[in-house]
Length: 174
Image 1: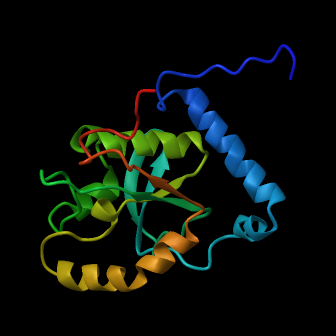
Image 2: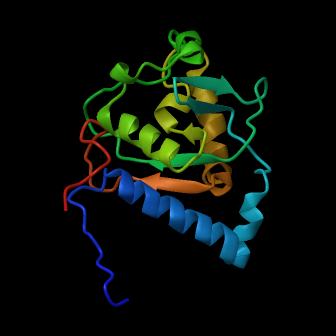
């Protein structure tokens, strides 16, 4: 349009980028026939999700605390350096609160981005599948079998393709 200038922001982490993604998602859900069905609640929820309330992110068990809306999923590279994850010894703590300072930068970035999309729940494999401790192998096998359903029922998948590990962060400079 005449007189309309598009400003290119220097980082994908800018709130205007999240607003654009939100607008695209809403347009997709409202105008694409195949996407309109997604507006209904998912038929399936993973066993665990992160509840991203603004003041207190925490892990929920969906069987005892059924989600009230959609969830997003994250695809990321684990890398070689260990990072904070769900274990049998910290599950109770995470059900009370997930402290941001314990999370790698990419996870903190994605939590904020998901909140900016007005999505309350988020599934991150390392925080929603038991990674260590009693029962972790069974939990992992159960989730591996259901992985297709986990991603298929999420309203949006956020992919961090550029990062070699979760410590790099979700955003890039342009």
